[in-house]
Amino acid sequence: MELVCPQCGTVNRVPPQRLHDRPKCGRCGAEVLPAQPVELTAANFDKFIARNELPVLVDFWAPWCGPCKMFAPVFQQMAAQYVGRVRFAKVNTEAQPELAARHGIRSIPTLALFRGGREVDRVSGALPPQQLAAWLARH
Image 1: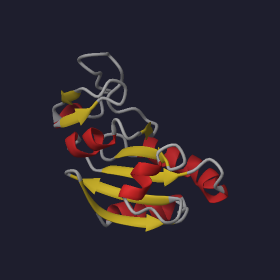
Image 2: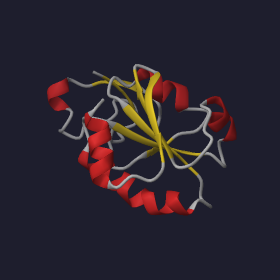
Image 3: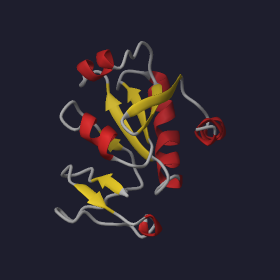
Image 4: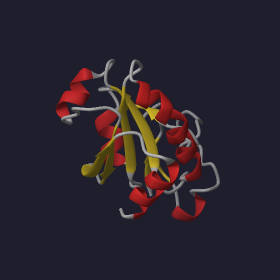
């Protein structure tokens, strides 16, 4: 299974049975599947979305957004629970307006789920953990 290192962007091959063994990047030694969301920018977004064989859930947010701040701990908690099943990533729409525009983000927080480099679904608003888990289970 191919997974992109969140630190250096190297694509690593990890056998599926080793996903829960905290695999390290062959190039920089960083943990390939950290238990926290990965910050994405215009520089690393496309490669991270396209080259990860696991689904990638992206939280489009902004630092001034109250619901985004309230949702951040939930997203962090879910990232830790879904290690090896879903990659969690965040895009600060204020710092990365071109990504927000390209993906048609009109309200925040917006969650977009990607598989194989393509968006398969999205939901807007801060979801409680149970609702987010149910939404992920449908995909």
